[in-house]
Structure formats: structure tokens, C-alpha cells
Length: 88
Image: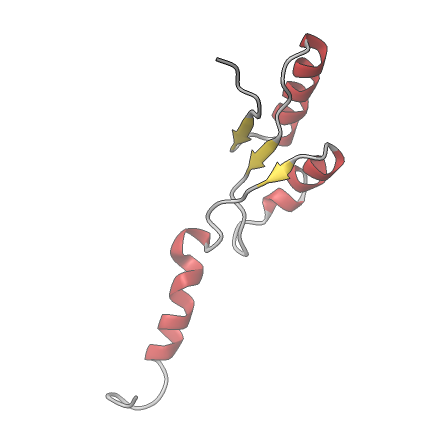
């Protein structure tokens, strides 16, 4: 069985670039998609991963867009702090 569309998750940009070179030299299927963690809290992918993906025409499917729940709690916390107790 052959993997026609390999992808990587949680790799550094240098690791992806090295793997792309290795697959090109060996005539192997190239990596087609990158899965980095990316949210308003963790935006490191913007520095190297996203530019690499754009330059190499790779897909990006991020995970943890709510910052591991940190961003999901923000509206609930502000809603609890509004108005007098028991007010709706």
C-alpha cells in the first residue's frame, strides 16, 4: 500500500523542508499538508510554517483554534461578571 498524500503534524519548518528535499531526491510522494497548532494564543506558525506552506504550495489544517479552551472561556467569564447577582 502506498501513501499518496502524506502529511505532517507538529513538525518544525526545517524538518518539513528537509523531508521535502528527501522525497524529491528519492522520487517519493511529497508531503502535501501540514497540521500545526494555531490560535490567537499560539501564533508561532505564522513565522515559519505558514510561509513554507505557501512557498511549497502545501495545505494547512490547523488544530486547537480555541487555544486549548482558553479562548472558549472568555465569553463565559465576562457574562458572569455582568450585572447584579441573579439578573438575566
